[in-house]
Amino acid sequence: MIEQDSRLSQLAIDLNHALIERLAATGKLTTRSWRTAFEDVPRHLFAPRFTLPDNLGGHALDVADSAHREEWLRAVYHDEALLTVFDEREMATTSCSAPSVVATMLESSQATDGDAVLEIGTGTGWTAGLLSHRLGSEAVTSVDIDPRCVAEARERLNHLGLDPTLTVADGYLGYPARAPYDRIIATASLRRVPPVWLQQVRPGGTILTDLRGDFAGNLARLTVNKDGSASGRFLPERVNFMPLRSEEEHLHELPELASRAVSAPGPHRRTNLGPVALRKWEFAFLAQLSIPGARAGRIRIKGGPMYFCLTDPRSESWARVELEAGDADREVTQGGDRRLWDELEAAYELWTRLDQPQPVDFTITVSPGGGQSVTLPAIDKQWSLPL
Image 1 (cartoon, one colour):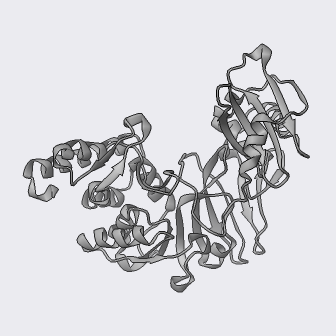
Image 2 (cartoon, rainbow, N blue to C red):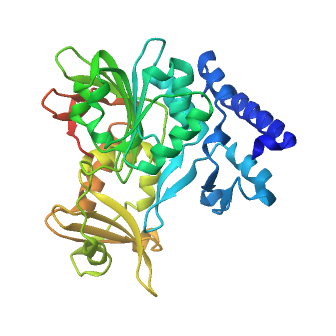
């Protein structure tokens, strides 16, 4: 439709050019070949309909709506994620990632001529299109658990003369039919590195993934070794992908645990640590390592206060702190075998004592047998994955 309107067609070119210039100016897009891919594989072709994030209004836009087509086009070229698929609970499950995040992933992947790449999470198909433009369609494989995403991405890519291998599959299991790969790039977050990925990457190849729990996470790049292990470190670049949809990665949940956390009686005491501490990305990263299995969320009692709750479905432990309480009145109530807030306080004390380390200070190792650990070399302290 946009091709039929010469004014909008030129506007799309101008907006894409301006976006590329912004990404280059901020250091997100530095390689000429990736810049060319952004020029020739424009984002608007992969986002015909979407819902804007709340900070941009939270409303839906569709290229088919001629009255708002210019608004749709301008929204496409904001440096924001666009929500494209929702589940039965109306929770977003797929997005067209923010351009700066896509550029960060491509630049950080180290993919170059001759590399075979597996992308985990096809989504709209835009990243697969950029990879195919740079490396050639034959070099690119992309998997997604959603058949509709794969079908729509294939149609969009074919429109541009690109024909990577797209297939419906659980990304946690990789895609052995096209292995081995030189690079695996995951555009969805995980709590640990899937062990089978190591078996599908050539020695010397890399895995780039967002390792993330409820508190925080960070982009990590690992190199696969000849013995089948992998090692690497967390990168300074920050991304925030949606969790990988996978039966293998499915988290055990206890819906009743949330209501218990916000209303059940239990031992309580004053605490000097407020939930605001987790807004510090660097601390939240260490806290996620230090409290494995913990989930976080805000829950309001009907007609009552809002609480910040920590829960652990495995031990059925919980902790709550009232968000509106002042520092002098802040109390924590805990229940279950684990004292989750005690663990959070211990993590904060450690983080402070170590002079507030950042994710880039940590390394990650995955053994051939699947054991995974994150290490802070400065003190030779280890934590186990999953988050």
